[in-house]
Length: 267
Image (tube, rainbow, N blue to C red; front, side):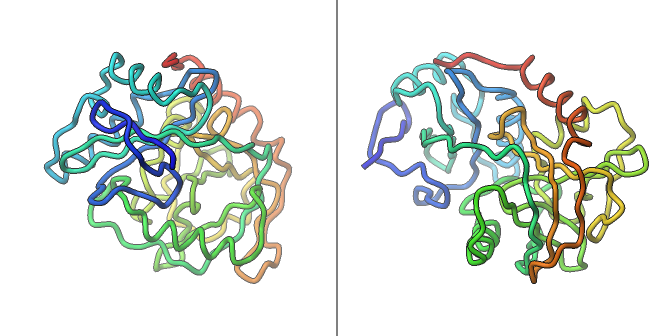
């Protein structure tokens, strides 16, 4: 049985995706690489936004107490992995699981699992994440590998987000991001890209952007926070968009530099 750090002590627990302690309400995941994390404050700000909506207090980890963070990470005994902080009504729990290799380029696959309507806008990142889990199950049913990300659409057919990632695309000199109205999460890597890309930003209610020059997958646990896309298939597996992922390199480079400047050593 693996261990998690819960309210100051190590206890038996499961930090794997889709497994949450009873009563869990909100969570954040961040990559730990060689003892450092990037942009922790962005994750904690999003987490606290959810806690405020639910009327829950923020404990020392959610509040960003770095002494407590370093103590917890030290107790978990790792320098590399995925840290997951889960906050419920009466607890904070930090777990560490393996950080899997990240593909340098992604392919997208449209999914039939409709992005559910959020209770609040912008929606908090809450647990258990039933809708995203259903999307992940659908994606796995196609027998695809780690380099394929599923795309969810809202009930009107607009691109919302990936099963584990935020999405963006470059078109006509602007950075297009799915509108908040599509039910997407306020992705941390996506928000960082908006801040540092130096491009006009279009909040899009859009079908598959077939005219895009580049499509980006954004996920805080990816190296640099994102990766390019070389192809997009529909729900039947037919190709509907393809492009050169190198077209996203300069934009992703800005994101990686922005995140590296905000690295914080925890172990």
